[in-house]
Image (tube, rainbow, N blue to C red; front, side, top):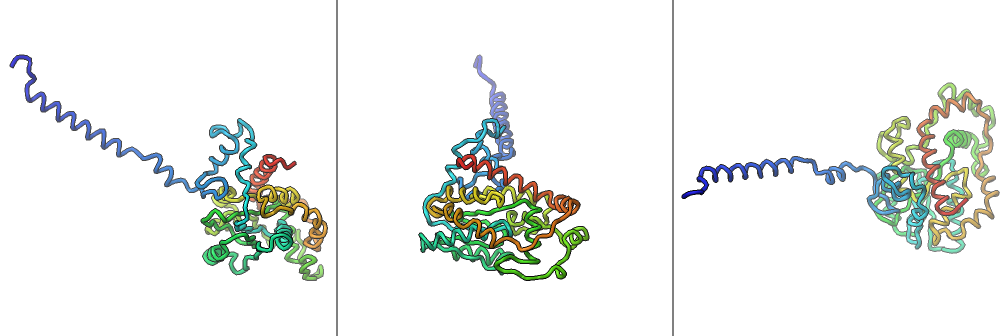
Length: 333
């Protein structure tokens, strides 16, 4: 028939079409699934307070408004409002860094609970659980019903459940180390060891000869992973910084008054009146918890300590900046 297409041409065309479809399909399946790969590779811990599943970058964008340049729009003054937690049924985990004012905060909370809210509890985390992650988790689960304040010098341990709230306080690393060292030697007004000067080493000789080794406080925020104990490991620093997103607040010993104010702002139903109680008792508690004796380190000793805790200082400065942003957002000046 005139004008008809030969059968061989039709067959050839169909075969070529089928082969092309197979090639395209195979190629599309061979391409990486970017969304799935992103989810699998995203190791940032979920955030308990500002929305489950937010990464560090997403928190930055949420606060400041830009992924490409998070600071270009300045601080978004609404981001901190989402951190305010009303209600009472929270379990506050205060895995306190030693000699950063944790006894002050827990004493205030305990007094406040006894005065106004006798159903609330302030519980010390047992010493033997500080370095036992399995038993520590079991302890947290046992005390999963709020309201409670659980305080102890334990390492960061993530817990599932929106009732868990993490808080902490930090301090200039060298100042904290010197305070902790002298506390271990002399004690304070509450538990004075009453050692005389002949029983205690000279701090400068101790540091210069390597007998007093500063460790910093990265493990308290990094957690139980073996690498967390290496405070010069960049991974330990990055993990500790990432875990800052899991804390409702990390306050500063040097700004204890503002730290108390932030706690009252963020937990108004639990900590209503804590600022007034702190104002009333601050001088007495400072005297009670102050280390009895402190030797004066030389500049050479201070320089050596700062060098040894360089990564702890990096962490301290990041946390300090975040705390100041939080204060500004909450209108605390």
